Length: 521
Image 1 (cartoon, rainbow, N blue to C red):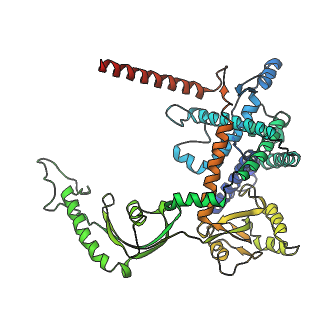
Image 2 (image 1 turned 60 degrees about the vertical axis):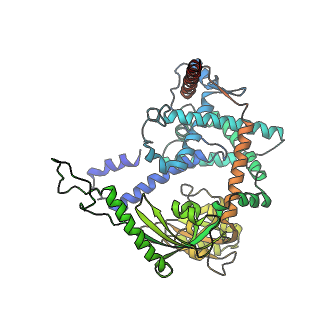
Image 3 (image 1 turned 90 degrees about the vertical axis):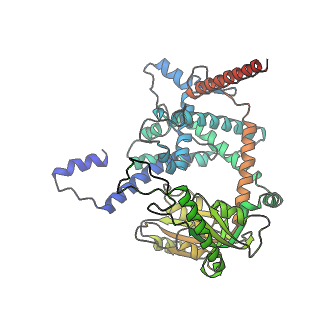
């Protein structure tokens, strides 16, 4: 019996509690945690290419059930993929995509509570088509990685990881208030049972371990990092400059430069006046002269902008500041025709920010027990290893999945208020600990922090990640070329759409070529 039905039963026994804003907030938080835990379980099985679930009807006759479970649904490369395996991988892919992009999906109009087979991802593909396409790509890459691991003689015992998976299923079912059998079915497809998906889970765990090994091998050298920087300095350098903005003052009612008013036209009293181009030009001219005056006192009245990165700057200012010939003391009045203003700027310096990042182990808690957690750690051996154990014990998997609570490459701009000051405080040393309380009354999280040490500068971490990602993408693309999908039963609609679009494109190109030949004759 779920919580709602219990509440409905008790309505006649005692007055229902009036829900406050806090009650509603906590209720939403609990619901979100349960959903996140379920998706976390689905998404954590493999660190390679992950996916989610499609609804199907179980055949009523034994022979049809057998064929559904063991027959070929699609083929990837030379291997047959049955419906159970496809649904399992579809669930992993879909939920991983949602967990990574969920914040933006609503902006695209996707209603995750509705039927995604009727919601359009593009002009021709539904979201289900798109997730099925991602699923096939995931299956191809996983099978290619598995074969690569075999050729390399790679071995990995998945026993411990698989037991953690089983424990997670048990915990997830308990949290959801359903049986483990139902939980697995909801997470991995209508046909899924622990026995049926066992080999697929173990294969993914094995492939994930091999992929991590490959990822480590693809880390760039210091020489490669420095070479990449030398070719792309604008992406990683910082600039300091002084800025003042002078906006054009546009008229709010007609002036002598206004466009002529046609006879018979009327303007409503509440209608906002739209200046003529001549009025706009005059306002911009006045703004320019004012900008010239501001330029004379830019040092005292302008705002100092420090450590500004190329990607975060206004285009016209960015292009000026990152010009290769720019030098200290240069000034300018830069016009912004769209924004109808002038930027008065003075260049200070350009440099590569060598400020080191920070590595820390962090426990996140909203239960008001942060100090108690720290005291528990202090009462033991009080080492980094025991703090990692404490982090795994208290960190809610629905909030963070970071093993041992270890966060590397932290920036002052990327951590909660209070933690930034503490982490980057002069004299901070490895082994220091603290409790960071919520920054405001609206915040819920407190943080127990163990300082590990300094990391590499942000620019170096960024280049390392870029080069590693490029190398891995190229590697996966190369090894999975031979693993093409074949769908003789027409189960994948997106393949039909792609074939139709390809045929239409060829026909259009052929017609265009014939037309050119006719014109030439």
